[in-house]
Length: 145
Image (tube, rainbow, N blue to C red; front, side, top):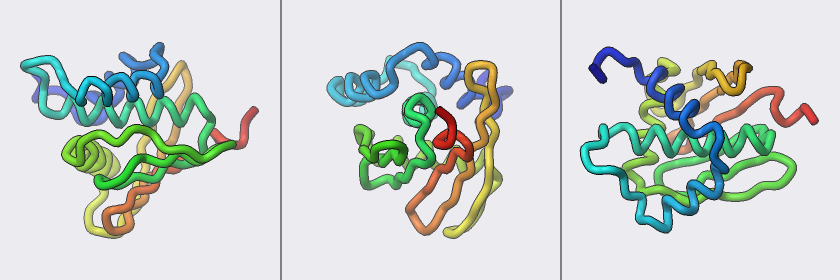
């Protein structure tokens, strides 16, 4: 059955499931628990949950962009700049790989976009890859409020 669901649908489902949680607190709690997942969990579920929580945190804070790579903490740029807990490198690498797949990106320097539904609205996510560094820009979020 999971083969019938696209990576974008899986990411959208994670976003929908995490909408009502405090994303920053959830990331910190998950980090404290050693990034453990329930037994039998799909191998992509953890990386997608991690990406969903980072995106929701940035959206909640009306950030303009996030930078991340598999070897450092994600950095959120908005009214203030701060980092979020760093998941195991494998989670981050797979999460970014899934984002690139959704956006149709290939190569070490690429650009693509994804549209996600969040709280009855559409959010465009522009993904840019420069080597191992990924920049996720959310046009318009930082300009409101």
